[in-house]
Length: 481
Ligand SMILES: Nc1ncnc2c1ncn2[C@@H]1O[C@H](COP(=O)(O)OP(=O)(O)O[C@H]2O[C@H](CO)[C@@H](O)[C@H](O)[C@H]2O)[C@@H](O)[C@H]1O
Image (tube, rainbow, N blue to C red; front, side):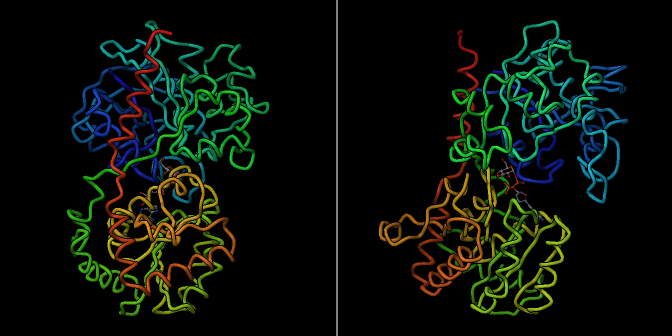
């Protein structure tokens, strides 16, 4: 089975968040199930190294107004296609905006062109290329199924899957762009690309897709409610029979404490004491006091989704209770300032690094005692999975994938020997305070804490099962109706 996986980022080439980890891991996750997956990415400057000697497989003189080429390269050992369109993608800053974080004003054109090219690959417009399934990730790729539906190429169009990694980002634009999308007028319909009078990219993809997935069963249920659906709950309910939740796995080649080159000391469940060396390295890097007391970490975008405002308000208490915090993140400027101010108030107890740093994120998982994830909503969440694998106990809000992947250390779960973390209901100062206190009282019982760590590290979040689920979903779409 041949699948085209269409996304705006993929680890290790270009990453701003969890989407990249998943897209980067899918080819290896699906190969054992007989799925040959080709990844399709926009040609940002970060791809220059991998496309240097790439073969041109297709040329456009006018792809929604831009000159473009499709290049053939590799991501690891797996096939990669790249949309090289300098007018759209060859610019500094990030994949979605300039260096200040402001979105590019032509994102509608950039990702419509990218989706149009994906649809061409998946419907016979590019000689030598054919795919059974087009799998589009998030709004940046979601117009591809809409193009396949309304303006396919010469061959039978591939069947389509859209995966929602975060429904909060929808790619919503005014009606004025419609004329430039090169879609027939009938596409501007209630069950087409129309969204509240304008154009909605994610909405269009969800209407056109043969199957919709999101990244955990609980989030799949949550987005049927107004509180989580962000305006798309009606559509999700109408199409509920096509919606499934498939939890993300983690890539053992990247996230494994036994082999992780970013850790000063590597370890297993049998050598947990070696984590102390990593803790010392964190203390040095973050300017924290040297001691064996509880060390919390945060590795996150600093946003309201992640509950970082509530956490910032809980830091004085965290310190009063005897905890320390090493935080790595970037995002909302007020939140960055709030965490930096807390670090100034509590020298030696709170250390903050504003920025994005992959190796430091590994060190924090490998040396801190617990990772705080008080998200208001979380489609799956990966940092709690990395925490589990590294014995860095996740302290999480009971929502979305966090609810599905962490087993709360209540008395029954402890007695049964299955607890892997701490959950709290709601993202309020009281709930967070209670969770911090529970965590610290567990930490004060070394036997219980070590049991939690061992349970967490043994929990299976490999891609085996989820890879099989995606493969089964693809197969089901290819069966005759
Ligand atoms: N400052 C920093 N430095 C280094 N690394 C950093 C970092 N800040 C974050 N990261 C890394 O970025 C990734 C974040 O992934 P998450 O799944 O937690 O959230 P995100 O909201 O980006 O993803 C969305 O998509 C994913 C994938 O489906 C869903 O799991 C999730 O719920 C959804 O919101 C992790 O690999 C983390 O280590």
